[in-house]
Every structure is written in structure tokens, then in C-alpha cells.
Length: 156
Image 1: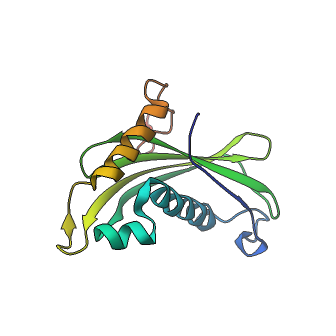
Image 2: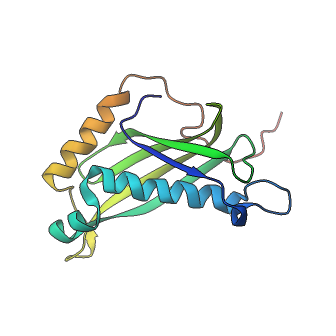
């Protein structure tokens, strides 16, 4: 997956659980930190939020855990704008280990919010342009198999 955005970190000891690998909540913390960094990347860092009186809320997430991560191991999260409209971003994040293997994915729906009105609103123009540019980076690529998954027990 190509991306102009990347978030890198190492698994801290406090993220490791009694099974000896990164706890499920910590995968979500890592994705949340990466999402915050992505939001900064598209122009809604602290300065942008203040300038536009605009922010992003998370509406829904879905995490898939594919491989274990252990203490001290490096990982990278890349983001793909899977879809978007005037005020929403369907974002797909992929976490890779140092060997380039996919270890986890997170699919989420984000909503742009006017802070003065306290309600959804279209992205500021410069942010909208950045979102569109991020979408175009991966437009036309195959859909990752984790996109759009539902939870359920398949019966035969």
C-alpha cells in the first residue's frame, strides 16, 4: 500500500499483557495515535483546529488482529483514505511489523465537526483538498479483505 502518511513507534513494555504480546487495547491505542497524526497531516493539527474552529470525531471502528507484536518491536502504521465525502472520511489503517508483515488493521469512519456549532460540517477547503489528494494516492487499488467485515458466527 502506498501512502504519503506514516506513523512509526516501538511497542513499550506497558503495552504488553499477561500473554507476552501487545494487548488488544494497545493496538487500538496505537491506531488512535496514528489517526491523530493523520488528522494533523491533513491540516487539522492544533493550529488548524484553532484557525478553522473545526475538528474530527470518530464515529465507528473495526479492528482485525492478525499477528502478535512484542515488547521493543518496531511497527509502522500507514493510512489509506478508502472513501470520503464533504464531511466524512472512511479511513483504513494498516500496521506493519519491522519485517513488513501486516499485523493488524483498523477501519474507521471519521466525521468533521464545526466546533462553534457543535455539529457536522464540510471540511475546510484546504483540508478537503488534502483528503482528496490522500484518496488519490490509493484510488484504484484492490480493496483490502478486512474492509467492510462484519462479526458473526458462520453457520453451515
